[in-house]
Length: 525
Ligand SMILES: NC(=O)c1ccc[n+]([C@@H]2O[C@H](COP(=O)([O-])OP(=O)(O)OC[C@H]3O[C@@H](n4cnc5c(N)ncnc54)[C@H](O)[C@@H]3O)[C@@H](O)[C@H]2O)c1
Ligand SMILES: O=C(O)[C@H](O)COP(=O)(O)O
Image 1 (tube, rainbow, N blue to C red):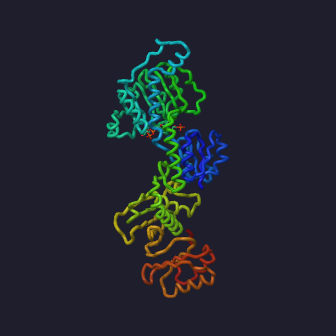
Image 2: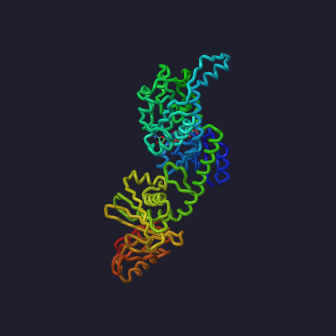
Image 3: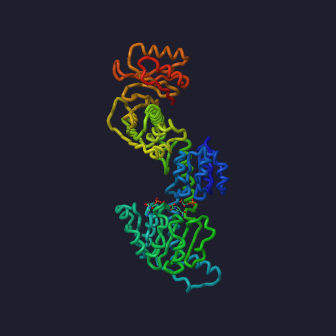
């Protein structure tokens, strides 16, 4: 039974779903990184929010880990390259808390416009300072959105409902989508110059870090009010403080900070500054959504191989997974076969699908071929890290889908480009389930790739099979299955024999002494 650790506060629905789906679950929250390192080796899955930082050190200790599930959107607390290199799937729940977070941004916008926190504190302190708190209307004001993805779009929709004008800066926003959203697409400088309110809704990346730098803040309209419910690090906090102190910035509301938890900050106590402790996603509705989604996604992956919302591996639905399963087995075997047989530097690989296979999701098939190929050289490879390893090694991966009908109702062909030229193998599924090799380096053959095998290339000549049979018999090697193929009568022939024990170097040396043998190799699957 797979085992999952929930290491951040999560709605109880998550644990309930894991148990219902046959996954054992421990909820151990609030641990230090060292404490997580001490226990993570026991788990197949790790379910987190933003508190657990999944570092290289934690991953190194997570020897059984297959999947990290983020109950939320941002995954900047996960070292995704390290997880990918280790073959761990990283998934998030990209929509479950978007409405809630957009509403928090709108709430903070109102808080700034009407100085609600200060007015509340003053009133409850018995001061009744009616003349101190003069607000601004949102109606007719310009809202500048930095980032117009899921949350940005919802904020835009709500702001338009408040009769604001919305301008958006997002390099990936198409003009069509801007029209659909009812916003004006602008450059960052234009946004800074025009916006009365600015809200941020981008991930923290090398391009977005300090997007509101001291220089950018200097270009804003005097009196601008700024809201950040996305990620700490998007705004230069020292420059924000200076802007608030000088009065150029009329107000700022931060839900997120460079350093979290933010127990102290020069911004605290600054007039017109409002803050919340990373509460963007904290509503009952959003937390139930993300807990259910993350548990279902992780359980799907651990129990049936279905992949949803993964950031480092192609999606594969729970319905697709069983259909693809026999293809993945075939793909891995073909990858492994060509990896064992093809020598010399490998610069490219083409994976072709034909017949029934052409209607399937090809990405997982490609990953399985690459995993089979690279497992010949390293045993830490799996379907998740195989494409990354291939890229790292400069292997050019090409996927080809043929609509044509061939000799087989379904076919996968794998061709590698090596220093010695192109080498190709092809396979099919018998009865839609059983993987079979049907072509090897241009020679038709029909073989089951399983267990230990002896591969021989020889000149097709009478008596060869008998001599090989006798040699194996004398060496005490039991033959399971025997497959033959030849290019032409009297030409090059191949033999693939399954044998009960691994093929030894001693046996290969003997086989190579037989007249007509060009190549003899041991294979294993
Ligand atoms: N405060 C919270 O509790 C909370 C809750 C949920 C999400 N978030 C954060 O909000 C952010 C946005 O979430 P989302 O679901 O809208 O993500 P999303 O991926 O749907 O949208 C992000 C948008 O940012 C845009 N973008 C990327 N680089 C940009 C750049 N250099 N300049 C301008 N725009 C750029 C993208 O094109 C995309 O449209 C995430 O970082 C997420 O972690 C915070
Ligand atoms: O990216 C997110 O989903 C938010 O930052 C929410 O974080 P949380 O789950 O820690 O509240």
